[in-house]
Length: 355
Image 1 (tube, rainbow, N blue to C red):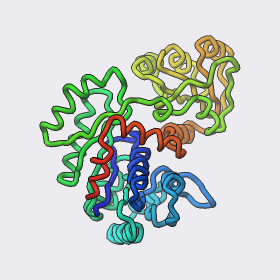
Image 2: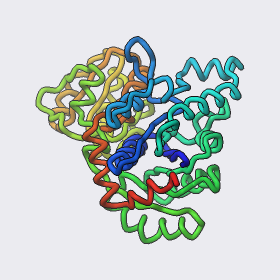
Image 3: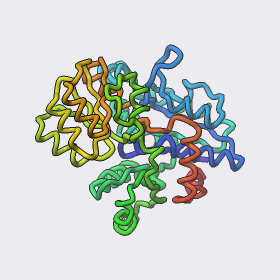
């Protein structure tokens, strides 16, 4: 039995949902399953410790009693990164820790899914990228990728080269309807012609792809300054408004389903964001309340304005954490991903990567 390492080309590809849905599928077919995420990157404070939320979800979804420190042997926090750069972390010792934790999880289980970091290159400073982890655990790799335009193929090919023979195949997730024909008719045949197997393409599903503006506000603890703008719109990404108005407007017009993070004292950026059809809300930092004119424009456009007291850097980090986590935060989300995999990919073939 080889573990399956679920990796990704970029952040927020639905990797966690895919990994847990695969494990749930194997468990439903009578296999004893285990889960680990060697480097915790989706960090939050829990029970007085800094932990990755994904192993906590795995414990719930898969009914595991494995200790969190075994599922997540390395907490890849900013402090850890700083210590590693200063030479205070031993890459060999960290690898040994990962192998030891995996051994404890694999013992008694016949299917183990290993979730990669936020991006497959994370961990290079301690020689623990996803390709490194795949090598040290003798894992087969499922690569999850987004697809917005043909340039994403470069990322897939780079990752395929990094994983080499360990790559079992690619799964495209959250593909927009408008991109399906190009992906299936041109991109997938191209990749397979280059020796990169593709397991399938999953459509965008709103309840998995983002969070509502209301959920974003609640997670951030933000004050909603608008009263009539609806908060049920979905947000799938965010942009930072830190440039001039014309440049900002050009960038905002090319996005979709986005939150714009900017200072509360930047009415030029706020107005530009409100004029862009793909912007769903404003997130203002620094506790600076916008002008009445901006609030009036927001109400007219039906776009909520959220206010936080934190500085812009902290606000960006918090927004990134909420939106980046998407909706893979409960068992229902994992079950929905399982349905998508069953409809658009060969689940049994994916699970067979462990054989």
